[in-house]
Image 1 (cartoon, rainbow, N blue to C red):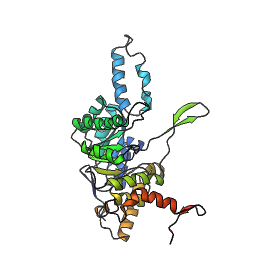
Image 2: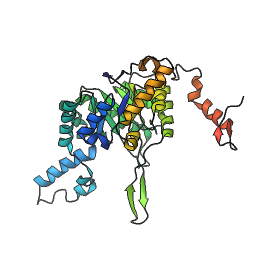
Image 3: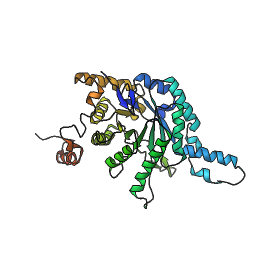
Image 4: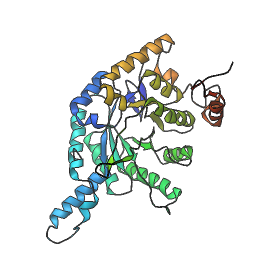
Length: 339
């Protein structure tokens, strides 16, 4: 079975790619990912706040005693929240490139246009094969219109593309008014790939301490339905490659994503639950299914069940929604198809 695929102009031995997570913070883990069969690895994210904080820290120490920026540093996360700083991140990329042969995709996480986008050039010089832009923005201003929010994405992408020559992918939120239009605009602006979709971790409240605190919930297989639909819709309509992420837990999830048109499938929660070596299990199950159904390669199935190629294109739109409601039997508690 030929599992090779292409993503961001890179030839990958497999569509199984660990996504940005704490697992990649250890070089040995990245080597384990390669040994288990990963086609590439997306590094954990470097945050805009880290880069801005570093600049403020430097200025703070240079102007110590002048009362400059007396409270400025309190607006940023505690530096201890970040395991490694910007310089260590670059060194981490260099060490990973020395240790493995598969592509290393760096990740920048931010929300505004600024000097942090130029850091992509240093990431490129450190040896990253590609760069993933994880744009995470929570608009809280009721007077901020959607056009300005969307244009901010385009501006960030344009700034990074101007700074680097390596391929750039954008990790998207599913919350745009028209996801198809946003994907096309990013494609037109030069995105080499789109990653669908970002899972936003929502805050929780600790009833004992009465503090707002982070609460990470790993994904479930049900989460894959949203990226599956939109990859199916976008396949063949934009030039950018498509990466599926969120809710991919087994070989069947991977196969479905490939069939709707994804170039690669990204793994995170399943590896956090079962360990890095679980990549081998998913690959083996893929091979067994492909052999049973007489598929010789991943490329043979890519896009075969996209909206452009499936027997019933309307299934990815309102038709499936109406059909689901009409065929639900509350007594059985499951979906059934009447004879």
